[in-house]
Structure formats: structure tokens, C-alpha cells
Image (cartoon, rainbow, N blue to C red; front, side, top):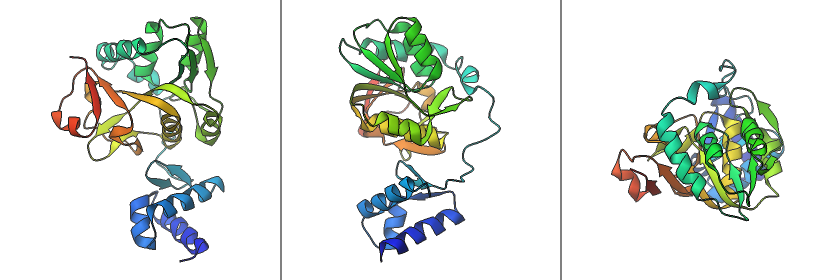
Amino acid sequence: MLQYERFETILNTLKQQPTVKVADLSRELGVSQSTVRRDIADLDREGKLQKVFGGAVSVNSSIEKSNEPISRVHLKENIKAVEKSEVASYAASLIQDDDLVYIDAGTTTGSMIDQITCYGATYVTDGIMHGLRLAERGFKTYLVAGHVKASTEAITGHEAVRSLEKYHFDKAFIGTDGVDLDNGLTTAGIEESMVKTEAIDRSSKVFILADSSKFGLVSAITFASLDAGTIITDKLPDPAYLSSADIIELN
């Protein structure tokens, strides 16, 4: 099958459903998964679809909800606050002088900021308030460039992904909405997922911050597999995860 025929098949599939998976397209098109990934990357650059971990979504996908609260962050920050703080405290202790550190937007990663003591590191974040709080504390801080999403107080989208391309992080601290054996690490937003995936790909060490309530949950978009980094949690609810992921359990 010629490339333009594959492109047409991929785009026609996305007209019928909001998401497609690389593995499914590989079987349907009779080509390797690496070929499908290249096709998706080409179509993503042309703006005809959005590349996500494991597949692609339609540029008109309705997975992103337009009726979200103005700030979902404030609704979530008091949920499991003690557990989040414990996870965040351990994560903050891992930062060392001269590290180039990426801190993902989110409430658990946000809990890190008041507990960071390393002034010799440089910090990059897609969290708008994270950046402000880091700067106010006197840390050397850079914000990712891109679309501002009010509901998550995050900078998202293709521009944010492109702005990360110049970085090579020593450590990345990533939040997640769900941790699942079958579906990996998931988040609710397509654009957020793109930024998380790019930050993970550009980091030497990746730490996933997930309190115990996140295990077994599946959100709309998978942004990484369970073995993408070390998962830090207050308590592991199911030992079955130990066979699929590197996990630090604090209690």
C-alpha cells in the first residue's frame, strides 16, 4: 500500500472514531508499527491529526471537555492532600545541584514546590502557578511556551511540545490521573498528554507521582507505559503492579 493510501485510511478511520491505535492500524494496513508511527508523525506535522502515546486522535476530538470548571486544580488539590504531600516531599528530596529539572503541571507536583530545598538546580515547568511559585521562592525557573489552559493552569499543545525539544532533563517529575496495568499512565486531556510524553522522552530519569487512589483508574488518554519511569506512591494497593513497574512505596 502506498503512503498516500495509508494516510487516507488513517484519516478516514478518524472520521469514524475519535482515536486510533498504532497496533490496530498496523494490522489493518499490513505494515509495521514503525511505519504507522512515521505516518502518524507526518500527519501530525501537517495538522491533520494529533499524535498521542500509542496512536492518534482526531483534531476535532470531543475527548477534551469544554464545560470543565474554570480551574480543576482547586477542586483537586485537597483530595488526598496528606498522601500527595508525602509523595511530593520524597520527590523533592531527589533533586540535586546542577540538575535540569522538569516539573509537570498538577496538584501532586505542585505540592513539591514548598518542599524543594535545592537552589543549585534549574527548573522548567508547564504549570503556570508552579512557575510563579518557584520564581517567588528564588529558584532559577523557565516556563514552557504554548497554549494556556485555564482549567488545569497548564501550558499545553503543539507549541509546548516544540518548546521542550531543546531540553535534555536530568530529572522529570510527572503527574498522572490514572495508573492501570492494562492502560498504563493516563490523563484526561489530549494536549496535556502530548506535553507529558515529550517531557518523559527528554529526561534521563523520570519519576511518576501517584498517590494510592490513582491505581486502577483509567482516564481518556494514555501518555506513557508503566515502565516509563519510577512510580512514587504513598501505598501500593496491589502488588501485581510490581511486575510491570519500578515502584517506590513510602509506607
